[in-house]
Length: 58
Image 1 (cartoon, rainbow, N blue to C red):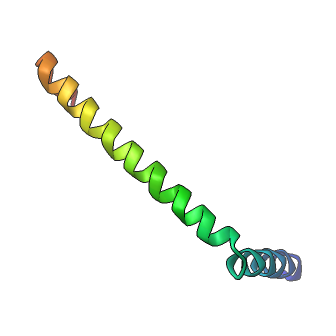
Image 2 (cartoon, one colour; image 1 turned 180 degrees about the vertical axis):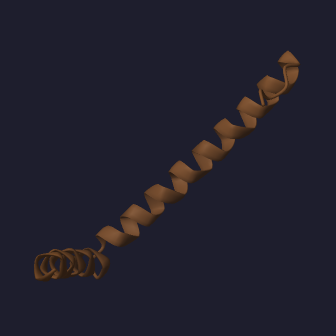
């Protein structure tokens, strides 16, 4: 149990270092871009599926 606590402590320290540096801001902006790309791909997929006329398989 102490081993797990030490592992989580080390992970928390690393996350804190990344969180207080500029890496977090860069990762957040990349995540926003990827999010909007996937939203566009979802809409295209839904439109293409509607045009083909096949409904979802249940």
